[in-house]
Image (cartoon, rainbow, N blue to C red; front, side, top):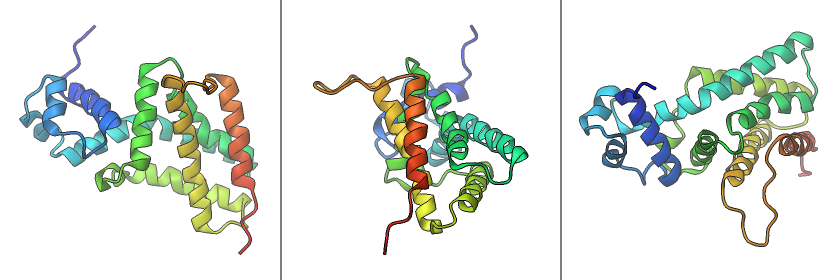
Length: 209
């Protein structure tokens, strides 16, 4: 097997450390030490720590985004207004596919997505580009057509909840079970439960004002 090039080694090390320690808790020196590279390599390949964070996030999210886009294309080719359950499946399903149980890569992906959702550092959130914005806006528009009673703010809140619920569930699959608690379920059962739960959450009527 060929040895990864320096850029890939830095990305691998940064993904591991950002997922474990967050953006501010990870130094460039720690990344290059783990990668076996010199400090100047980050500047040469990425420009800055913030751009490295963006590259790490995009590498993890791009397969998810591509699958979400393909799933939505398939639904919209059949009908302009797919059922909420099918939209949730197309939106959340790729998260399960990219975070499989029993896979260290899936564990890192789930940890990194939780970091992106929860890290207070601006650099951990402001990395998205046109591809991520486009798929988010397309799903937002599709959900808005079939859930017209929700305000834009509440609809976006519920969509963020899909990411949060799925990432936390996948993260727990890779962690040691809490004593006295049932172990998280891996596999198709968890996927079905999540889609059912998230469909109900997305379809719930707006709260009374």
